[in-house]
Image (cartoon, rainbow, N blue to C red; front, side, top):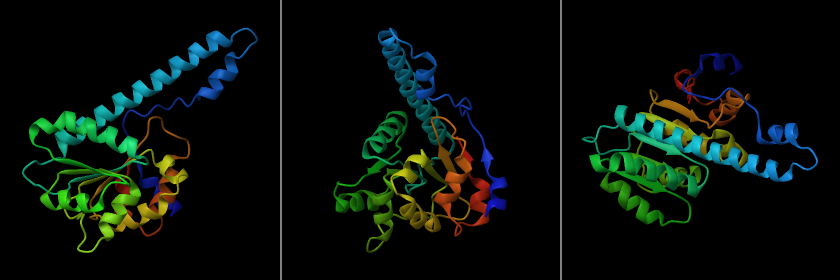
Amino acid sequence: MEGEMHNAEVQGPCNEHQTTTEEKIASQCEVGQQIYLRAEINQLHHQIVQSATERIIQFCSKVLQQLIDSDVVHCQVLFLASTSERVHQIKNVMQALGGGHGVKIHACVDGNSIEEDKHILSAGVHLVVGTPSRVSDLFRTQNQALHSDHVRMFVLDEPDEMLSKGFDRQIHDILPRLPGNVEVVALYPTMPEDALEIARKLMNKSVTMNLWQSIVFW
């Protein structure tokens, strides 16, 4: 498996400068600077949030322009995020960008009615955004509510967060259900040094070679 990891692409506007907030604090923390330090931390947090929002808008715009065929009312992009809040954020961005062009987007999260999810999916959507556990459940429901025949892109938003929350089992369940030619995208606000190791843990040995060759870090 380790040998296959050389086939993964590293593309897109990833920030290679890995200075963390903690390192920034440590470099400036001196007696009497608490007020200035708090202002600096607030500014850093604002920059991180703003950057993450801009990146998701850029990525969602690219997906809608290049991948979605509005005439094909089947799930073409499957987007996973680790929290319900993040799922709805991504869904709202997609809706704002593509809703006026007839693109149907559905958010599937834990806690909502799975019967309602099944009803909406059966009516047809172009893009599904969801938490790993709910998406996995929808694949496993009787009569399979979610179908992957037309999925062209599988997006993992911040895979390191998914791994830390224990979602690797659900992702291992979802991946084999996807078409062999699907493009896999790992979406990070900044590129962690162990990105390939994280991808290896999430994708596991059952994943076919062509999926490994198609993974893109963005």
